[in-house]
Image (cartoon, rainbow, N blue to C red; front, side, top):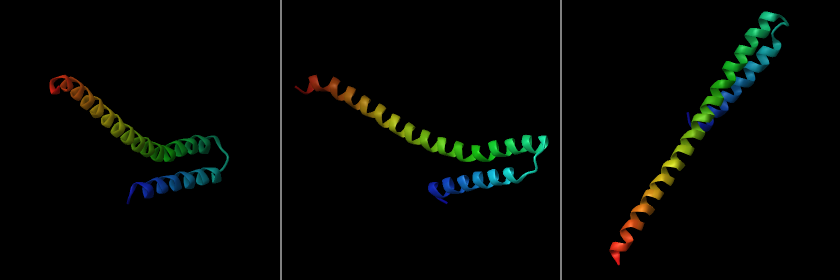
Length: 82
């Protein structure tokens, strides 16, 4: 399963749980359990998407850091090359 498949499946899970909770009888117990079910089901996809974004941001940050170090190294070596 690739990243897009997993995102799609977690979204489907959240939507199915929302429909399930909406079909529960109106009672205080069903409301409390339903809210918890919705929080749990939607957090799976949200956490996965957040992890994917952070991985991309981390990669960009590491690339930027490496680029800055390379620039600093080249800048300090430039006078010696003259």
